[in-house]
Image (cartoon, rainbow over all chains, first blue to last red; front, side, top):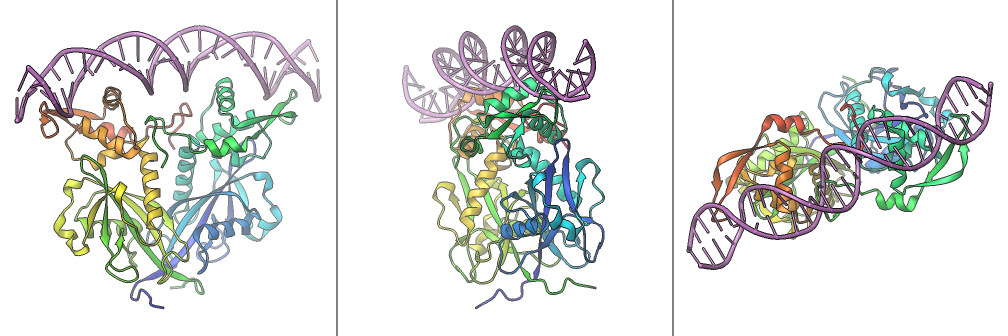
Length: 233
Length: 233
DNA sequence: CCAAAAGTGTTCGCTCTACACCCATGT
DNA sequence: ACATGGGTGTAGAGCGAACACTTTTGG
């Protein structure tokens, strides 16, 4: 087979920015890097793209290696290609972010990597340009969550409205009036009220809800305030 | 220097989706591909990332090669890495989209590439996965233009409100009431009314406006309808 | 019985939308 | 004089924001 001769070939990596929510604060899953350079320092989970896999496959493989999870919400964020970003050898990195239900995270698998959850407000120094990746991931999540219901990916199947509100307050670093909040989320038609309650957070207990998946997929694309009647492409 | 041995290295390309607006319709700048495979077929302008350049530098270089323009609005869109996307050899491509003032496009430079502007509604078949890139670029532009004033990048320094409205109508494929439109854009405080008029479009003539750059940069980040008082990160 | 969190409705202001007429001028 | 596109104001509806009290129950 003919090739594109004389062109530079380079290393391509995937790094995963893995977010979780424990009911109180947003968290980030980091590992201790196992090889040089920066061996032993806190890092995003990553790996090199293999010859026969797509970028999405690569990201899913890397995520599963660390967490044991499949079918997770995973979205390509941005590609970082500064020639100096890795001092060892030029490596271009495609960053993905993942939103996972922290309760599903399987500890035993991660022990290989000495992984730990960090509060987003107390993350350690990261290697290379990974702090930039993290900042951009947070921006993207806000941007997207402002119009699309992605934050449900961080919650268990059954969740309460106060939990959901805390999550939004974390992500946007603000406080929201609970009456307005519950009106709004209920008005979307995305939630189904269940019969039982979560008694962990209070004596009275808060009703559990789950997603109405039909409406969820149907409304996922609904945004566009500025322009009346656009076609959706 | 130590290296990451045993890892696959691969080709990395940048492809540019170049949009322009002629006052009537949105257009896309394509070239005739100059080498195999798919030689002679319509393609986005692209090139390989060189050993010593960042991705942004690469995209700017490629855009300048074709159009002669620098300082253009250029944004990384997405990275495409299916192992089969280029039949010759595995090539991962980082797509960028550009918004240019079509009047500034310099014909003589592009003659090397047999470039042509196509109406967005009448684009030819594109090579590889470039149709997907184009579709995604259009989506991104809508998404972003719904909240950020990026479409001004497609207009000359001096433009009229009817021109601006036509542009929005093209991008969102809809029609907008002109009274409401002009109220809205004027309310942003982004426009400065000039003394002279454009007499090309009508006998009466339409006032020229230009961007108020202070307000432009200040308001560029203003969106976020869903959440009150977020901090902007 | 008291503390702590859950749940719920109304009012007000503002923004978005719908809608129609006059203006300027080149032919 | 008329045809063409430019420019402007208002009224009504719907949405988002502010705001306080009652309920439940474990301790």
